[in-house]
View (cartoon, rainbow, N blue to C red):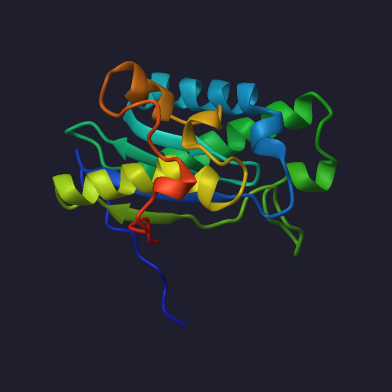
Length: 178
């Protein structure tokens, strides 16, 4: 069995998919305040820029740009996951077995691995941002991307990068592949 090796590059921009173990769970949206607090805490100690992000009930997608002198995205995700899990456990929102890391065959709250893709160029960045923002429509949570509250799309609209009508399911041309 080969060992998966990540190739972190200082200052690079990455697309991520991070999943909960229970694909039927709603922890991420039900406790989005805790997730935001965990991300903010990690960003304070290990800075990075969130270029785009969407939080769905059981998974999230994000594009992060790392500082020029640091490529350790794996540590950042580990800390975000640990912080979120710890916050829920301290508030009694998780049973003890879900709050521990994978030990003795027990499952943790999060899937152990996550998907990362290094963004190659402006076109790759744009396609991944669009994928992120359209994801709630793709999964059937809303008919219009702007109706999903846990998305950086709202920042993009406020900044005039895209119009408020962006991502209406009937108007999509199918270019949002995985």
